[in-house]
Image (cartoon, rainbow, N blue to C red; front, side, top):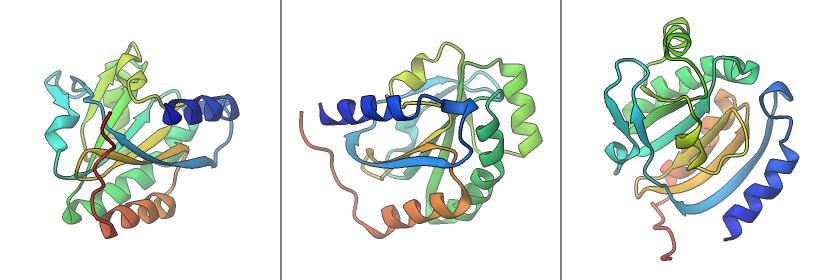
Length: 176
């Protein structure tokens, strides 16, 4: 699968991950169906699922409270989530290899307006084949992954790619 090979190559380039660069490393254009990701909510333990967002543009952000670039990008993610909610864009965080108490403190500190699912083992995030933390995946309304933003993003970058998805029709992923 070309997507997997591309991500494997990017993994080698992004090996510094969270501890490294504070800039966005690269953007990968995708055309893959989003696998269902689900798990307990950081906030209250209720079940969250990406399937809930079918028919909406979805931004999935993999983050951890111990990740400095995650801390740097979180204020911009909050701004974009609030600005794009009226346009039908939803956000879902995936709290990677973290403790719920620390994650809840993060959500309160940054006033995060969207839910995050708890992923203490990293199993849920691994389904997405992302290369490091933080990473952001933009999914169109058909459930097709369109962009993978590897590394720390900012308001301008994320808004740009959301505008591209909003301006184009949903693209069904290729049949397997």
